[in-house]
Image (tube, rainbow, N blue to C red; front, side, top):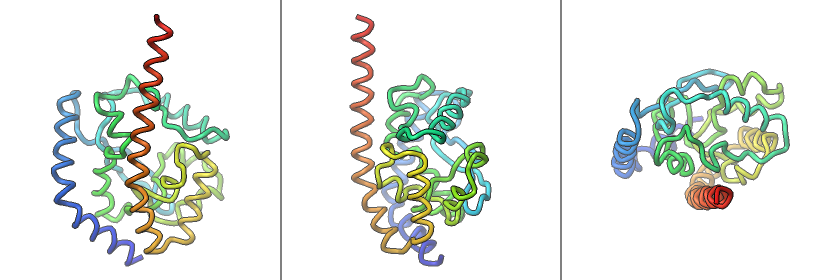
Length: 217
């Protein structure tokens, strides 16, 4: 859709004066926290099942084991459990400041490159990992009827409190009825919701650490 592409490019251009210093700051934090590349590249599945290289700021130590994430994801896909992040209570694979980047979504800023390339949009379903896509049922793949995005209807509709099936249904609903005004509304809602998620992530980590200390006392 031309309006969607135009909105993406326009908002990125307007945000560049703010984004460039932020990107440089995050890159310096990652460099000072651990060895390895600043940018993490991962194959993802997007529009109509097409695969592309998705960019993110690296938030884990180089060589971190990803098999635990795959197992955790499979568990979420086959249960009615809320889609809480695996690192909500701490994860030794994550570098210093990594939890903050992940909780705020700032680790996904490099995906603006994917947006400019036309592989993603600012608003849309999250692009999934190939092994996740391979387990989708036919009706669930309807979420790929639109270009994936950095934020979306699922992200502003409860996200960590929703189940996998609820996420799929929200994404399909957006794919079928997306409009310019809906995109603008989702973008505006994303900011306060991300701030709330950061606060919740901080409180969860603090509570978990207190329990660990109490258990070891």
